[in-house]
Image 1: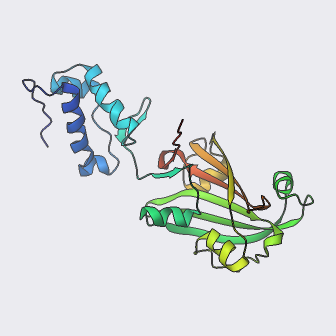
Image 2: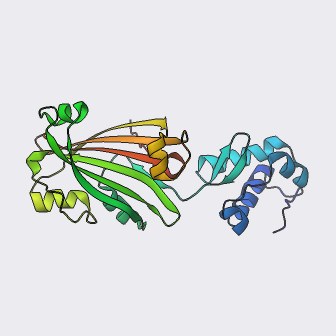
Length: 242
């Protein structure tokens, strides 16, 4: 691909650079993880200022198409998943609605004793046995999210359910409990050794942690869910109307 712009064109230079970069992002060498030329190199090659390059790359970074790593370089962002806070579903439902195929790397259940946070939310005695569902999910290139769900004993789940089905379909259709309210907390943190091992990343890399507190129509607790997402592969979108 020829990397040039038209200095005689009435189209602003930063627009031309933006379109040039969009075309470059589709090239195999960059799509497969290669770093883009450095800003100073591109500026010299195109005969323009670094500020013009920066203006274009800022736009593409804002759109989620580029990832900048200080001291390393700029590369094409990997496939990401975006979810909205104005509606909520199980992960399977979210992915199905977006037409995104994913892989279950792990689905397992176990009975555990409720720790303080779970016991307090579910309004049950500390160390009451609750069902825990662990799922590791991602794309063909590897996992990007690890979930743990804990269910209120009142629901009656036994751990033998087909958890390849949408979780909230199971709860509603098989156990006649309707998930109606979700309260969520989102924070960023550094990956622990265990989380890094699960997600196949380096310890200390950023992960997004989402806690979900799900209740039924009567605001009775149903599920406590916590998810650990590779930060580069997940976006939370919030629409706020005044």
